[in-house]
Image (tube, rainbow, N blue to C red; front, side, top):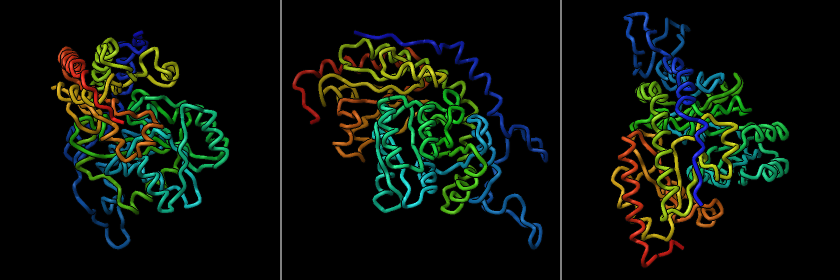
Amino acid sequence: MRFAINLKYGNKAIIMKYQKITNTVRAGIDTDGQHGAVMPPVYLSSNFSFEGLGGKREYDYSRSGNPTRDVLAGAITRLEVGHGAVVTNTGMSAVVLVTHLLKPEDTIVAPHNCYGGCYRAFSSLSGAGRFKTQFADFTDTDAVRRTCLTHRPRIIWVETPSNPLLRITDIRAMATIARECGALLVVDNTFLTPLLQQPLSLGADIVVHSTTKYINGHSDVVGGAVVAKTPALLEKLAWWANCVGSTASPWDCSQTMRGLRTLHARLRCHEENAQAVVRVLNAHGAVGRVHYPGLTNHPDHHLALAQQSGFGAIISFELKGGEPEVRAFLDGTKLFTLAESLGGVESLVCHPASMTHAAMTREAQHEAGIRGTLLRLSVGIEHTPDLISDVSAALADASRAGLGVVSFG
């Protein structure tokens, strides 16, 4: 039985949402009082002069602070409705920056199906004695509560939608649990961006982004951001970012700001294309299951409706059969490039078990529901009929490869 896509968040609603925040990402435009440059200057200087002995200006060294980086931080802060943000040099440095809030005796509770890079970082840092980690199934709120009341974590880490199965975590419920056990609630908002979800307004204390993805959107800059809800949290995060040197370069910030200014237009196109691709996958006999929160049969569909303003443009699906079908699909597509990452204007396809989540053990992958026949699509902004034709042709190739199935084990 095939299920329909819920189009509650149709084009009209999406456009209204995007128009409401468009002015936010104009930060820095027409602020150059010296020459009247429409676009903000890029301050590539590594250091800044003092006004004589003891005369420190607002900026002294670019690792500690840079006006170009502050423009980007300000725009992301306003989009997330936070107090302030630290812009980092990669998405994973944003993740690790948050862990500097932990002491060796502290615990972080994270999803058992979290991004493979986070799984590796949390496990490795715990192994080195930096803090303790407990993994839990965040689709079971009661189980998370029991884990948190037992271990009394300092941080509860949420990734919603999850990567790669797109399960949705109830942010409001996690905020309640965090208050019960005195923890900070940290939410990775990379997949949806502030346009489709604002975790701070749902009770989170910190929001994390890999700006490499949708915020930059052009697959040419890596970066991250950590948005704090309070001045005290921002002060701690900024201190650690300066201390360990994880802040982003001004040039990368300028490029990311350029991408951010078109996010509203790009994301609308991303979502429209994703819904078209979901229809093709959902109706094809070579596909065993489609994971997309916009489908009415998705286990968290109603929760997505309650806390998101859209369903995003990431799709994962499971092919029937085994390795021959997977190889045939990957060889058959011409517009979906086999690569890691996501959120760029180009369409990408990823095999999580051997790529993004390869750091997880086979047992951990199976527990998280990551099988060898699972593929993840990051749907780009190409011409919709071209994407439909490409996916259809690749699925046809997968169907023809059905004989002589080789299992992934």
